[in-house]
Image 1 (cartoon, rainbow, N blue to C red):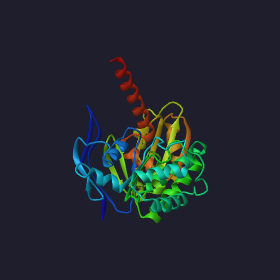
Image 2: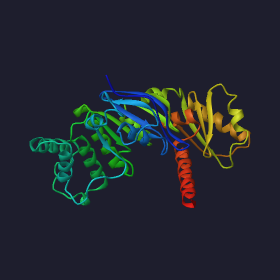
Image 3: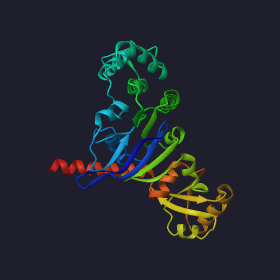
Image 4: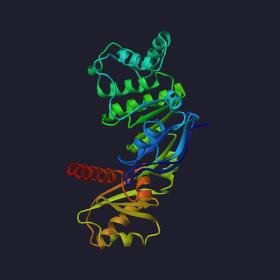
Length: 330
């Protein structure tokens, strides 16, 4: 059964193509991740599915409802937690949830029952009478997730659910997301630029680059595409002709230079490190660091785009600054 079905979904902002002709099916009950850097089109994609933006072209069904023709039905079937906080800090946790439930027309008995359920689900049952201004950032995020579940949605959109949180709090949020997906049976679609978040949480992951889906599969299957160990090198003065030399070894599957580093996909990597270092010495390359690791989703992104997510985010930030400067000159 399909929870979300998009056909050629596209969104343009002037000459910028934010979402580029996406065809995608997300299954009912699935915990699905959209992985990519800031500016890749993840939030724009979610906003179109939530009927907050009209697509330039293409179409989509959310829980069987058309995002253009059945907007009210779509909105009744979804919950949304966006990046920016949207809770009222002058209300208590319970008051925030009660207000949201009233907006969806839940009667008093249902509201009371559901508030208890969702607060217990996110571990805030002892904070019902505490003002939101006295919640930590992680607690506020958990309450926002609880609020998104108040009206029994079929699909829950989480846009960068752990952005800005410390590592420990982030892992706690992951546990709550897993729990709600399992106990509520709700289809969860989350956007993230944290590789480990997508890897830990998601049944399937779509990697997005410049508005296009460039890879789609389970995290394990995506990583298996690399097919070898990953070795990352850093040299004191670049790699000069070293890359061409490495490509001559049949046990080197791929070589990618990026952001001052050299990433090698290598068969049986731990036994090849001495050869790699000795070859560098012969070529006059001063290696200052070597690391060996199993493939990650960052490596998958790098293989499909030729850039790391960190590099892409840096480029996106520079582009945003450029557009901001141009806008201010007008």
